Image 1: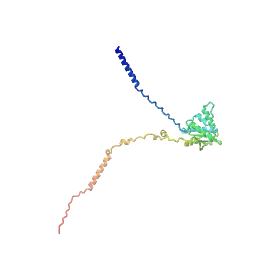
Image 2: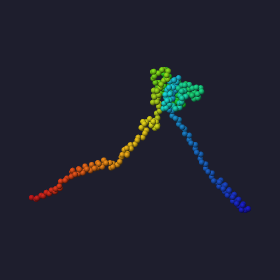
Image 3: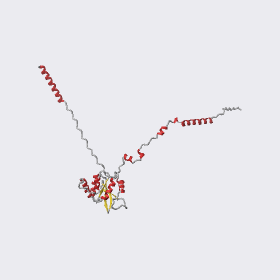
Length: 264
C-alpha cells in the first residue's frame, strides 16, 4: 500500500512538472500578415482613329465617307460598330434600340456647327468612342463638305474637304470621297513607327531571308605553300639569281703587278 501511494505521488509530481513546463514555454509567434498587393491602375488606351459625324441632315453624304474611312484599319476608331456608325451619321434610333443608341441619336441631333455647345458635344462623342479626331460632314449651299474636329484642343482644323468631282454622275447618286480618304490617311494617319513585324511585311522578299553562304571559296582554299604557282615562282627567282651571279662574275686569271724603284 505504501509503494502504491509513493508511485501515485511520483506520477502526480511528474504531471504537475509537465504542465508547468507547457505553461512556461512561450507560444509560437504568429507570422505577420502579408500586406495586400498594391492595385496598379491600368492606363486607358490613347485615343486613336477617326469617326464620322453628320450635322444637319447630311446623312446621305456622310455615310459613303464613313464607309471609306472605316474600311481603312489605320483610320478607323475601333470602338465604332455598325449600329453606332449609322447613328453617328444621322440615322434615327428606333424606340426598341438600346438606351445608349437613343442617347447618341439625341446628341447628334443637337449638333449645329462650330458653336461652343456643339464643340462640347463633339468632345464627348470623341471620348466615348476613343477617337482622336472626328470628321464632321455638313451640307453648305447644297454641297457636302467635311471638316476634321480635333478632340484634344476641342477645335476644328482649318482644312475643308469635298467629295470627288464626278461630272458624269447623276446628282442623286451618293458622293465618293476617295481623294478625301487619301488626304486624311496622309495627315491624320498613325504617326508611330512600324513594328518589326510590320516592317518585315513591307520589306522586299530577299530582305527578310538570310543570304546563302559562299561554300565554293571555302572548299577550294588551301595553304599557299601547297600551290604549284608558289614553287614555280621560287624556282624562277632562283634561276634569275644564278644567271645574274654568273654574268657578273670576273673569270679572268688573277695577275699580280709588281713595281720596282731603283735609286739614282
